[in-house]
Amino acid sequence: MSSNTEAQESRGDLFKWAIVVLLVAAGVVGNNYFSAESLLYRLIAVLVLAIAAVFVALQTVKGKAFFTLAKEAKAEIRRVVWPTRQETVQTTLIVLAVVIFMSLVLWGVDSLLGWIVSAVIG
Image (cartoon, rainbow, N blue to C red; front, side, top):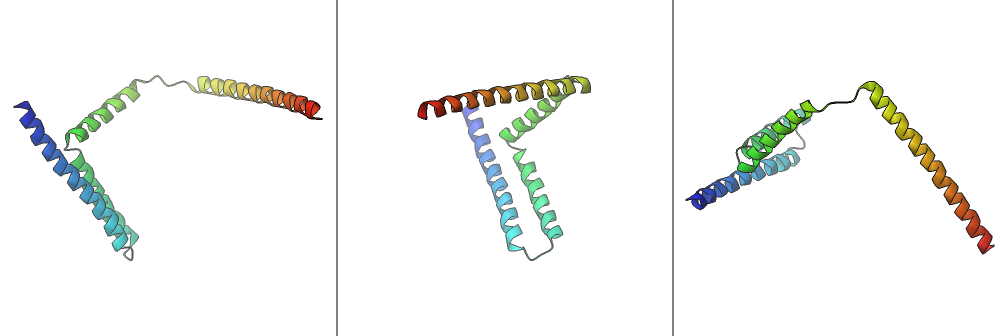
């Protein structure tokens, strides 16, 4: 019985995804076909079709899973402890100092190797 339910869901989802593809295609083709019309009207039409496509996509199993993932990610972002301004400035200065130091080291090694190669080649 479980496989029958899954087959029914996959057919329904396949139909819903086909509708999503048709809505997106209608937006692209319609925007191109009505290129002589006002940009405002074309924008409104594309937005309406995009909202309809997202609504239909969210009705599928994968769409619901994506929506759940997005809600959980938003909740997780709220729990992040963000650095203070002072910590950010200090970290940035440390990174800049290391980058400058490493660039000078690499420049020195490159110059040394260039000098050695020039001396060998003549």
